[in-house]
Length: 455
Image 1 (cartoon, rainbow, N blue to C red):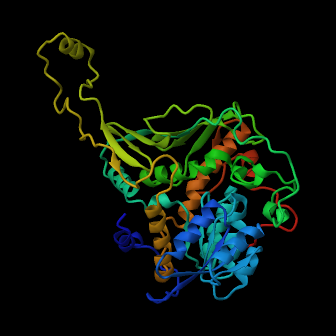
Image 2: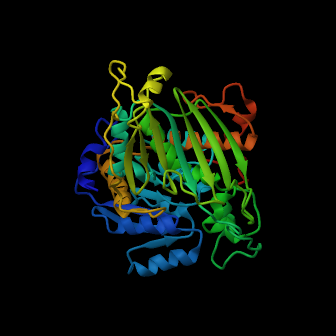
């Protein structure tokens, strides 16, 4: 991964955010959220030189107790994340909770003077993302979005090739997630009392108060509107981040989406089949989701394909490749093509090259991963970048504003789906022009006692 080389270049020309730490200072970290992702980030931080994890927090007390016990007295545990923010000896927090808690925790952390690493998808609504950017800027915090693909050298190379015009003018981009979870999907567990030690009311937070259901808590929460936005905001956040980075744009002009929960027989809500089309200046993006069929697009279960006039560039977490345009493509001249097909001696137009304009590239192994497996080196580089920026007070590779623009595209697509019609988006003004119905969906109703912090 050449992590150190990446760190030297990651923050070039980034704005200075305030007082810098000394290069030898050990950064004191707290981990908020101890599910699968949070546990992994805790482990990465614990073995990262220059970082010392002092505290962990989670609404499920047995998880807290587990990691405190395993730390040999180095960790203090809390069930209420606010006790972490009260501590003056914490420099930064990692927020790895379900999506609907990202904004409140991250904003309160900014107010408490903590730098923030917040998992993707950055926000649950468009308004939350706007407020997270405002909080980071007002309190001069280093704020990294957990879009770790930005710290992978092969994604950086792909963006470099596209910026250089290697595959010509790009007018169409496909991104996708295809899998077969039929017929049961997440299943239909009954509502029950919460497990001993789980603060269910705190877990729900701003979301409506409902009975405990295992699918709303462990992993499958992302398929419920109260806590997330389905595959569009879960995996779409990664895809749209790379696409907008490569194409140098901050958001779409419009979105149209169709789909539904057509094949999975479980108690979840978000679509298991989805087609979303985003219009951008000069190109379109289509994001497809299939959870009822695993036939791969471009030979990959998930990925991005950039279709250019001179070739196709395909990338996923495992590799990237360039496929040149067909060497026998013809100019738009029927008579000349007909003569050539009959074996005649044809004078091709000036400048026409029957050979591809770009060389074919084999699959270039990159992150050492397949399918949905996350490569440790990529995450380590992303954490390293965050910690380096805490010292330098420069903006990180996936600064909060970048994360906000990336997830904003997904939110726009989700709103188009839920409204059942095309919506127009003004990325500069951060609104749906002339569309009060869509604007009303930029935020949500917060349960009493869990209002979004003011900035």
